Length: 112
Image (cartoon, rainbow, N blue to C red; front, top):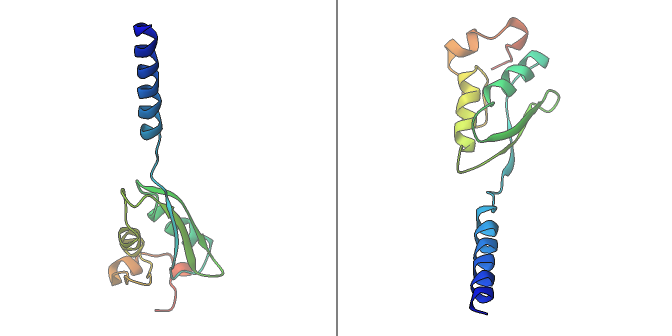
């Protein structure tokens, strides 16, 4: 009987460990305005946010808006916007440097 009781306790402990180990961080969905013009901009903006912690990102050409899902323990929305600005595109919070903007293809140079 002692063996059965110990076995039940071990099984319950393993179930508890498995439940807590399986708890995953909830990803955050957000969006931000990002200046740009075309499909090439879309490609560049989405490539700029291909970062650790970003689960997916899609820039809408017509709305000039980036929709993103990310893990806040790995990356912040602030860092995402910084990376977009580093790629030459202005966001709500960060303006791209003139040097980064000048590197954009002619069709990607939006009105500043």
